[in-house]
Image (cartoon, rainbow, N blue to C red; front, side):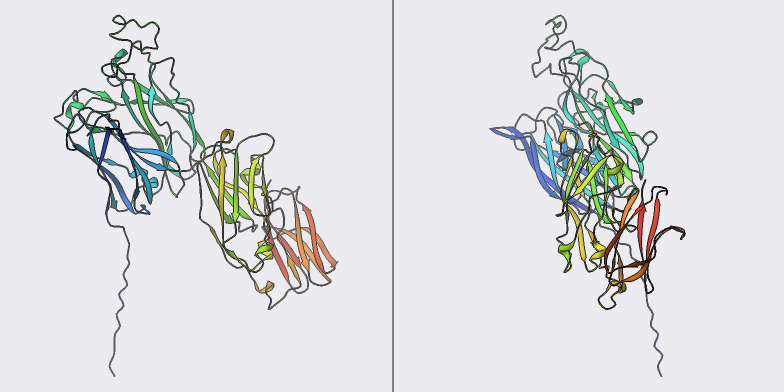
Length: 561
């Protein structure tokens, strides 16, 4: 007999994405003239659907001269991504004087908006033709990322903030944002460049001003963005005054953002109010200054679009939060699931800003079962909504409307269970499929619409059990209590299939009987319900037990005070 040996090799495989380069724009012409304004170019770009397995994301920018030559002037330029109907600037540069150049920016912290299909905008503030040919490439480098989950929130974003004009005061309002509970690090990213010349102090392009950052009303950082290295610019030689130092930029160079670590000041699970305060400044050389005298106060009081232009700042900023888990960048993020204790639908909301109203539909179109039409929902109870004094109304069709009751107070920024919606799924054990949230509207202050995203559908499995099946009919059913969770009164329904004696008791989480609602009670066949008042008990998990000579049924209920 021949012996045969079988050797089994077991391989442990780790799948990583290969390095990927996406050419977003390829020599796209930016120009102005001949009846065409092509200063901004927007296109739809397909990026990798997921990027958590990429260690780094780089953006390469290349400028070339079209036939006829480049724009001879230095022009501010930016690249932005549209996300949740808002534009996020992910890179800025200033064109060189009349020559081509290229730069690379690390955009890894924008990974949450650089995936799937995106709208990409490239802007150059040129006023001539032929101007520039722009190529933009995204390089995705495989590897284990240091921060796979990143939240990006827009802060102050204004491409023209007038400076030093009391008739047009700076309006950069404080912004309050919620910091998720699992935040690992938080920082404020500032991209500020100064423009305009021929003014008092030659502001804002050639004047060093130091702005300030406050958190919760307390000064934490100076923002000094002056560039004193323009003469070392690798994009040289150029024409013009490229060697002169400037406020936040150098001609022919990328603008490096400045990051301010907030981790020591911002508490996870709480809000932080940030303020950006510009250094005090008054432009005496302004047409809006009634005391300005031509040739005395300054050479000219009027702006002339050449040597005397209005001082202004081009500001973009983001709150960037590295988290342990995946989060949305939207103002509000809603998910639906089933609470394992009560069986109620659990609606969770994470909102970075206060919310003044929520409306959505509960979608059951992807559920199956002969008794689907008997599905019923009750009004929402408990959770953050009840704590904030909101009412959560649910119609027969599953339309949920949640608003503040009487006081008009918003739902504070935060995260957690928004409400529990009791439903009669336990009475319909054959139901299966998925349930989801659709047609959502989230309102902010004075009815403004907030950005929002919805989590995935919740998959349901049939809860058909042996004691509820057609093969072994039972003599009684213990139905879900309502409301559940409750405070302090709940109603416990049950069904008896024939006249019999039953016990109905309440137990705590330690198995101690704390209340006998029915003891050796002779009950007639049919539907019954008992109200239980738990006002003398503390919040927690309790168990309802229905018992006769043949069976014992138990349901969980939650007391929330």
